[in-house]
Length: 138
Image 1 (cartoon, one colour):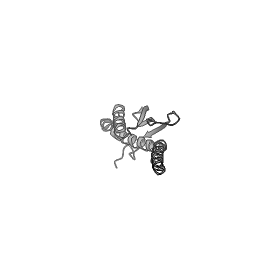
Image 2 (cartoon, helix red, strand yellow):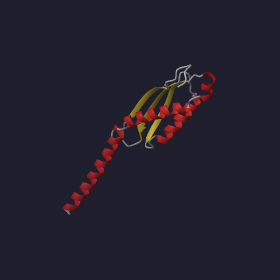
Image 3 (spheres, one colour):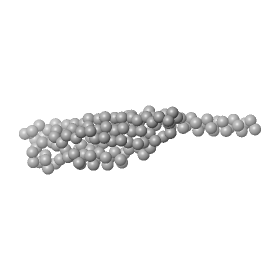
Image 4 (cartoon, helix red, strand yellow):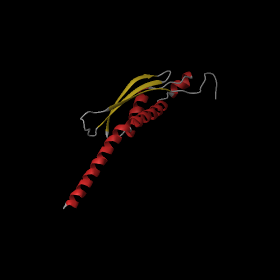
């Protein structure tokens, strides 16, 4: 009978350790994941929002605000983790010269032992840069 209790204790201890590791991993790796996810998506959305008719007419590089917002939200929804709550705030979009400012706050939906929700905020400012000089052709 004593050996059975030791088996139950080991199984219960194993479940507790796995749950603690999952909670710890959810809280620690999220900042890096969110930063790089936001950075890559912002870069791609800036390229998607490139305003080709304006470039052809004036020769200046600009972006379209609505196209950037649509592309950014679509890409973020496709790539974000389904186990977290995200609050996306697009602070500023400047069409010419192309510059955006984005803030993403994420909070875990997982159970926390203290009852507090940890929210991680990443703020990113991006500028679309090129090697283009007016009046020259590369």
